[in-house]
Image (cartoon, rainbow, N blue to C red; front, top):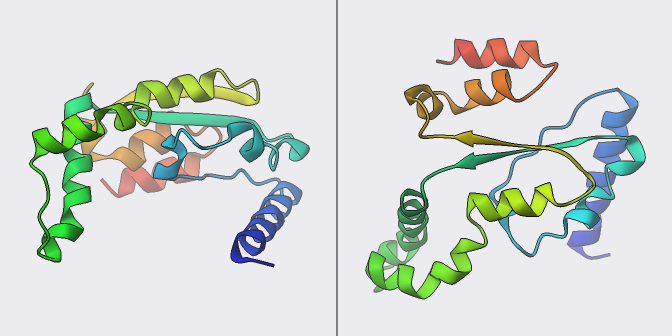
Length: 157
């Protein structure tokens, strides 16, 4: 079998073991914003175990988020000494593709899926502590039944 099948089998085993032990599963990935993600297929691994998917979307202003994405994308070409377009040039070229990865579109994709239990949005611009302690606000405000994780995150401040 190819590597994808092996990883999928391990993933299914992980979910089975977590369900048997009564554990929750926390997953994070920037890939969850890909418009090619098949949410229904992804959920099919969790549904047999009665897991309820709670999605937390972090909101950043579009141009702050776009600037950050640009900075990440131009690191490798810069290290290799390759030319990279200016931010306005890059944004003009990529804006249409980027919009589907923006928080509003990610929210809409998950919210409209009947297998998703809840979708929350965290506005990173709402208060200063959102940026300074992202794990703390996540574990304490969005992860029900995880008081130890909340306390540990508070200690990290």
